[in-house]
Length: 320
Image (cartoon, rainbow, N blue to C red):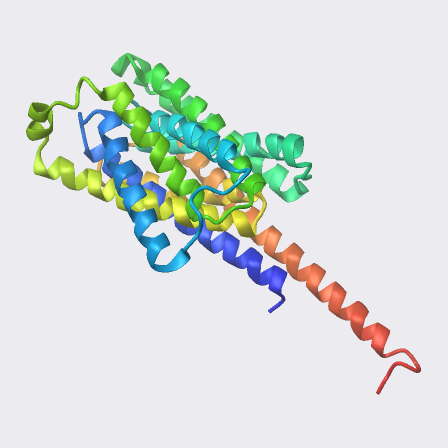
């Protein structure tokens, strides 16, 4: 297989895996119930730092303070904290499926930022898929509001605002990972450092020994599972960003929408209208279609180059 085509396939596989991992992490955040978001982030961050240090010591052996990259790494960590905090908060204020669908608009912001900061033109199929995703998002959120969610929950609108902000900052982290060109463990490590520090600052007064004792063993188990899936998702996402354009990675990661909606229906017993199902279907179709179009385009380029080389060496005087 052509190396560039193989790289693209790996990028899509890693990105799809990260989407599944983040969807599972989202489920366990929802199951944590009334556990404060900063505590969930703190547990995840400490385990994230520990995992990075152990794996780096055993296998990767990368320097954890690369020259000329520290500013961007810390910026990545701070933006990552805003993203994680906003996403987790939205999971506790609106439905899992709706929050995930809002996050699915990330490719639009990534495409704009990738063009502005990296000078990368977004392929037409990716642009079309992003627009189709947007239509799906509008259908889903409109159906949710039509069913009276704003009346049911006074913080419903806040949940949508927070997850939208988190989506924009998430797009910025994608661009930073592409721009830094560092080993994929480093962004995960600095995300853990920033998240742990900012979590303690925000929730310092709440994290008393008595409060920690009052947290049930089941809630601690959910937080451990949040951490496990989120850390795995971070690793696979960063690897995916090293093989594929940021806009495509953001779009393909929308595979978690399918899983999130399954969780909503099977576990949380949320009902969906035909309009919301249509919206979700459009998002899924756009995601899968964009990935296939990217692979077919790369395969076509490979065949074209191979054909040109074959013609060149078959000319008179060049054959063996």
